[in-house]
Length: 122
Image 1 (spheres, helix red, strand yellow):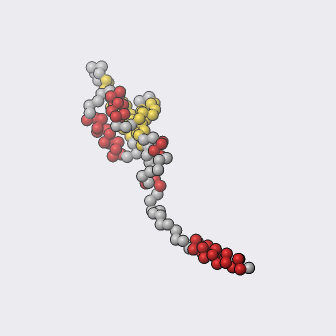
Image 2 (cartoon, rainbow, N blue to C red):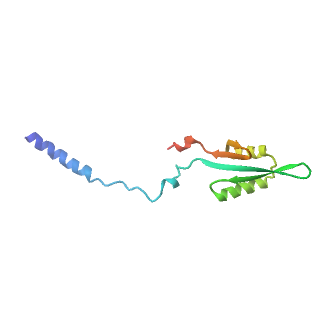
Image 3 (cartoon, helix red, strand yellow):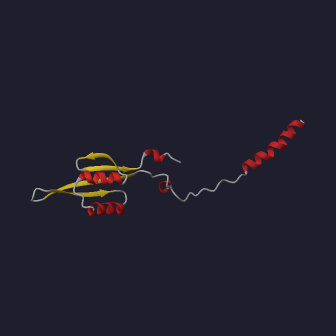
């Protein structure tokens, strides 16, 4: 009987302390979408339109589409300012910027930046 009372005198205070421990404060105001570790992959679409001149010289018009309209406009202006008139040169320029060609469908090119490995890094 003494052993049970001694055992309860040690276990009871520990069990009470363990249950009254305060919960850690977590900032729940931000959603997972805005977490910096969530979106490591960016996607971009490039549409190419061929414009034929009277002199049988063809030129190309490039139109970039991303989630951000501001970034799309900046990419359109950047390629236009470089005066690149070849699809291969534009692809090379985008590769130097870190964009990787994923797929081609007629005159539509799909790119991604980042990798799936980045999603699982901590």
